[in-house]
Image 1 (cartoon, rainbow, N blue to C red):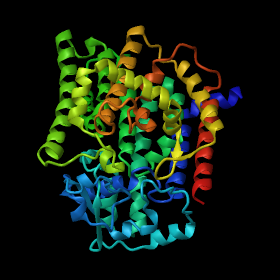
Image 2: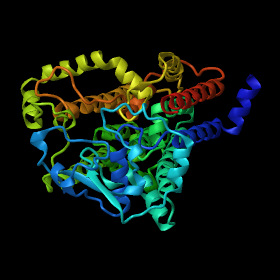
Image 3: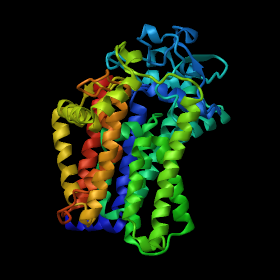
Image 4: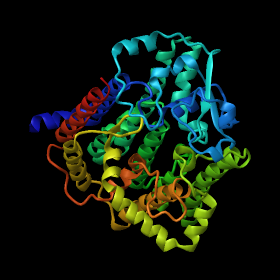
Length: 481
């Protein structure tokens, strides 16, 4: 066992880790039926739209869009039927009727076969015969959020590929991007590569990475950004132009992925000041990348929301809930800040198991098919142990920055969903999904390092990762075949 561990280390354990990640990613990409991932139809439509150079989603009402196609989404609020919402036009050959579901429908009831896969792969792309539908919760995303999938769609059209091949090529584009990000994250932080690998092998991480969802880019950027910023503290050499350019790109990409994850940029302040020069220059550069992140986020928000008059999707449209008013909710928070934070604590208490399950992996278009309970227990154990022994050798202040940055993102996630997905003054925050915590998981888990490195860490991580991948494929098979 010692010899095998040493061989893995000499060969480069990260090479084995990334090969396994990509292998299981490709398998779940082709085994998972199209659009059986939460919100994937509306993510796909947005990615396709961007591939055609339409960066700002056009607006339509439910009445103008018509009842024939809704990309798996339906407006349940009669009062909102005349509100302008984001829409998209997609070739009908890319979205066969049997692949789309209503959000309330149990998508596991319709089984999938390889005959259906072969038929989809053989379907010619007809860009003239199109379907139009609403994409109210994804039309707001900036173009870089879907860059790998959009580029793959563009390439597929140039090569005149069939519809099904283009769909899977788009998922493959997302997977390749995330694979590169996970690879570089492990290269930047070799002492934490087993933990990074275990997080990347979470079924939820893998299935989102190999899809057309915006979560692919979000997960990848957050992982590699966290690892890179932490690695920068290990040197005292002056910043290069490439590193400064990298900070700019990271700041912009985090703003595009999801603004609540911009707190990852706070890890900049762990970098030795002599790397920048004077203390003044150090703080000016830090303030500049934070300002750039905020500016990009606000500028896109004004361009896509403020200047268009669009109505962002709320719980009213999704299930007809009443008393959903972001302005009134904001006033309630300002007047009752302690009540708001109590609501977050109570929401975590109520939804803790649900958050845990869905952050590790659930199945179906509505995310209601769970893996065996023993999997969640069994896979959590190695993640916790590798978190406690990830060898980062952090100082107390550095741990504090990691916890503070993740805590701010955590509260921001609940704040957003409290504004648009929760009734005014509600005592439980609605709309928060466990997978939202995956991008900040590295910061939280890195901060826990207190134990010496585990023996046979690479072998143990490999075994645990393969176990997770096999369980993911098995869950997919029993859910859809």
